[in-house]
Image (cartoon, rainbow, N blue to C red; front, side, top):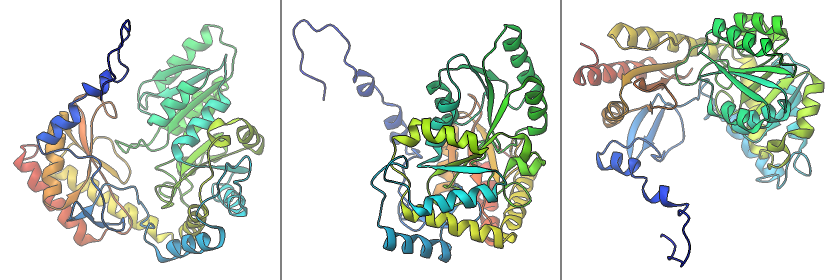
Length: 408
C-alpha cells in the first residue's frame, strides 16, 4: 500500500516501480506464466507439478543422484549426528569436521592443492571475485557469463572489460586495449566452462594461450561442468588437459552433487587469501551438515560409477541429434544442455505451456539471460533418463513444434 501523503515531500515513492510492475500478471492473465510452479514430489526424472505428472527435462540433476539411496542416507545420518544447521559462519563457529573432510576430498577430486566451500554457488563467485580483484586491477569476462560472475565483478573494485561470447580473438583485442593504455594492475579472466543457457563449452585452450601471453590469471566457473566433463568428471580443465593452466576452478553442489553450496579449488595460498577476505564466506552461515554429507556421498558414487557419466553423454548426444534432425535450432550446444531456440519471449512462454500441458517440464529462457529475439526452451538431460522417457519427450516436442510452425 502506498504511504500516506506528507506535506512538503516532493521525492518519488521508492515503491512506485513495484506498483507499476505488471509484466508477470499480464503473462499470468494469458495463462502461460512459467515460473514458481511448485514441485509436489521428490525431484527426479518424473515429477508432479501443479498436480500434473511430468517428465522433467528442466533440472540440473545431471548424474541422477538427487534421489540416490546412499545420498539420502548420508544426509539423514549427518542431520541426526550434527543437527539441522551450523548456526554460524565458517569463519567463526560454523566449521564442522565434515566441511574440512569435504574440502580435502574436493581438492583431491579436482587435482588441486586446496579447496574452500561456500554456502551457495552464487556466493562462491561473489566472494571469490570481489576478494581477488581490487582497485587498480582489471577483470575480463565473456558477455554471456552467469549472473553471479557479473555481480561478483560489480562488487569488486576492479575495472571490468567484456569480450564477445567465446570469441578469443575479441578477448585478445580487449586485452591489448587495456595493456596499451599502460595498465599496470593485476589481470584476471573469468568464464563459464559450460555456458548454462546454450550449453556450449568455452574455448579454453585458446583462452589459456592468450592469458599466459599477457600474464592473466584464469578462473573457470564449472557449475555445469563438474561431474559432466573430463575423464573423471573434474570439469572443463580436465576435459582439455589443462588442469595446471587454470588458476581457480569454481563449482556448485546443486547440479551433479545433488545438494546445495559451492566451492573453489586453487593453490593453497590463494585459498588462504579468499578464506580470510571473502565477505560472502565470512558473513554467511555455513552449509548444513546434511548438505556436506550428501556431497561426500555423491563423490563416492561419481568415483565408483563412471558409467553414470557415460550414460549421461549417451542421452545428451541422442537428444541433440534427434532435436536437430527434426529441424529445431539447438544452437552450438556440446553438452547435456540442449536449447530449442524459439524467438520472441511470449512465443517461448506459449511453447513451454503446450509442453507442460502434455506432461513435459522444461525451462523457458528470455532476455537478458539470452540475447533479444533468441528466447529459448532450455532442456537438460540426466544419466537416469530412460529411453522410453526420451522417446516421449521427442514425440511431444515434435508435436508442439509442428503446431507452432517451428518445424515442418
